[in-house]
Length: 519
Ligand code: BGC
Image 1: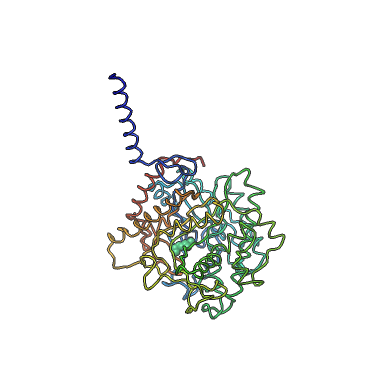
Image 2: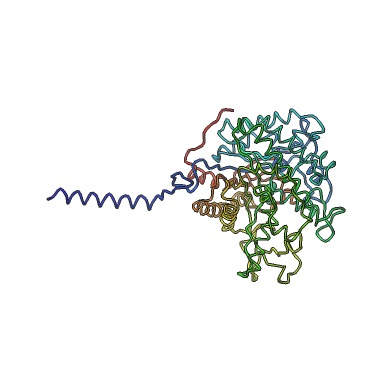
């Protein structure tokens, strides 16, 4: 009689223990794998950078000039009159920077190759072997530390030779140049690089380069900006078309000549915004969708579905470049992943059926919407020192879920996410390093990302922008995005609180998955 009683007691105790265990340490199934972290075991944690913002060495070892060298050297283009001639001297200091990454415990590093360092004159000149040598050394050093290179072929830059010949994305011929360049990169680096992004933020390149004209080649019409030449209502679509087809050309070369043997993946990185309808009205909901069409789907739809978004056809009609049979054939190669750069969110109001004041988005060629950070006088999120950055972590899971649903859950990487602060020479070094707002920003955005992943989004990596403070385009060195502070007089790097926080976060979520690969 006593034995079954004891047996029952043990059985109940066992059940209680199991319940306790599960509630203290929830084990979740993510993308078919069991883990206590929301992220899959093979998840990439890294930091991101770009050649122009980091490398410096703008004329070293045979590098040619590019569009950003040219643009920054013209007075009035950059807020503090600075340029990327030296930047953070990553070209010479990459080994030291690799030690900083090693300390963080990242398993990947996103960087871009400087096109003009490899091909100073595009396909109209020779390969610069010193450039090839440099990236080989960087890639090998990364792999020795077990850090996977995640390489972007162009992050806003193009050799000045091609910019002069083609304007630089206005001529179809640029497609051949991009294909030629991509082929060289796959040939010399592809045995070790398993992640390739063709372009960084082509939507930013064309909007800022050909609509508002604030980036090179500084082209726009007078209603949109202050340029000497350009047509803001036509050229962004031509430039975008040539970029989309250049992407397709590079993917085709990769698929046909390299991918089988090299076993890597190729995708594109887009700038994204979460765009929340201003109200529940049907007009505002359609406007938010239209705004995504004119910003994000503009590039992804042709690459993934072989056609521009229907909202663009409806509004632009025949002024949208048409995709020929030959183009569609090229586009069939699609992509393997979508890179998502997410920083901020906005409200969107309809301007087709209701009256709007002039403002961002409110033109036919932008989809006739009004993009604003305020609703009924209240900001969508905490403002920051960066005029376009409002803290809205929910936007991370919203945009990931939107892309997951629209593009059938193609693998995604968060290729950039980060927090910028204005440089203030009067701030004490302690305060400069104690970046609690950046820590809160990253932590809340990662929590939000985890929600989307738990709901099934196939997100495979997260890259913080950025490892170091660096050259922030039109803002020069006045805005700092780094997990490390850089003293621009001495180029000394100093860890911020966020670097230590990210290190701990990675250690908690990566569970010892970094493995050294041989170079
Ligand atoms: C760009 C980076 C830039 C960052 C912060 C991203 O859109 O890819 O080059 O530094 O935003 O502005």
